[in-house]
Amino acid sequence: MTDNHHQIAGLLLAAGGGRRLGGRPKALLEHRGRPLVEHAVGVLRAAGCERVHVVLGARAEAVRERARLAGCVLVDNPEWERGMGTSLRAGLDSLAGTGARAALVSLVDQPGIGPQAVARVLAAYRDERSLVSAAYDGVRGHPVLLGATHWAGIAARATGDRGARVYLKEHSGAVTLVECGDVARPYDIDTEADLVHLE
Image (tube, rainbow, N blue to C red; front, top):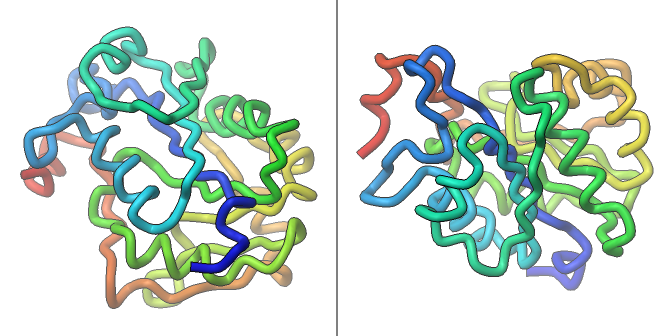
């Protein structure tokens, strides 16, 4: 682990309402006996993120009650129904003034992405101008590391269900891709059929 790690905050987007899962919030889906949000925080910590901000939305009160999230900064996104872009904006806003020089953004509904992949993305951090993305067989995925100099530009373009995608596309020449296909599987838990991935 490098000395840089305290400059990088983990940012977990966990606000989704699970519309295609019959309205079950993704943060509360069970995985290995605990809520998925708790599992995802554990992955970030295991990879070396000491500071973790968690953006909550759907059933935020229930998530606070049921998940053990001690030591995390919990960020409420009242606009979560308008899509992931609002959660990314809320999360980046919450990091302003904390001294964080980069945000490592992960999604609560990707339990196939574990500490090894996250650690690889963290290891590619250089400074607050860094843009790093995990790749799976060469295709950009999550997690992504967003240096602080990019936050305002990313927030300006994060609308609806688009998070950092538009910005990363516009700046693709500056993005460092880190292949993680050998250590992680980037599926999402979006529909009933995807629940087979949970244990």
